[in-house]
Length: 417
Image (cartoon, rainbow, N blue to C red; front, side):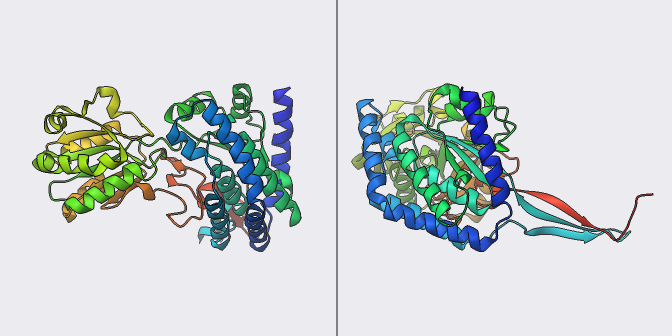
């Protein structure tokens, strides 16, 4: 029964994708503007649905920081609408000629961007993903099949229905955006095997969730999201700058994947700097853990275990590692990071260059918070995920990450000898 239902959804998405792939930019932009207006017009309806999800989540004792991921407000809905409008202003990647040349026999070859086709999204309690995915897949000429978590099901249904109605209002197929209402594990497993209809699957959620999808899926997967992010404070760092960045990266929204999880500090400044870190984070009730050196300086903090170094807390928890120098910092970060976002705080150009070249991550910052790893902040309007792999796309994935290419060869009768 599940397989039959998903086959129908897949067929509908595939049919819609063929329509979307041929659309002019103007029509896609018109649809995006209609979707933005629809969200604003139905704000009360969306908030009512979200309130149901929030009530259920609280009854199920979902952690407070996870509730923040689930919560929608009028301001957050407005931000979703603005994201749609920003995507509307971006250049359409479809049809872009990425390179071209003429062969010695006069064959004119060009490489052009084309849609992927049907994108599958499987994600946890992040209702904004529904809107971001719809915006980016539409502009890039793809259909999308969405499967969110049970925590956000009422909100996702409301959002998807509103977006589908907006598509119909501009004479586009509603099935360009489809949401699977069944949130059982069996449905998720079936979706991961829908190779006849889905061209790529993008999971968003915890590290365990993403690993599970990678292991089970036969549809090609783009790994995203797990963020064990570090901030390294070098010996020559400006303390005030460093403290501002640490507080922002850790506390501004600790439940998200680009939040800082680990602080790495040069031992030359540890005794002076770490008490200032503790004082700066105290108003936010951040639980600190540390290695032996950090614990000797901050006597009241917990001892960090080997497990801590690789853990993405998604909470008001942070572990501290004291290192001998920048080389030790790079070695520690590359061993334990999830290849998401890493930062160095330094006044040294040579340190910054060494760090950015040696660190293996999708985004590397110099003197800035890791919280900027975000499609909207990068100017993409939205993101469909933050890729932590190295194939096809890496970092915040905007429109071009949802395209492939094909070669078009123009001849005048050439045949191969």
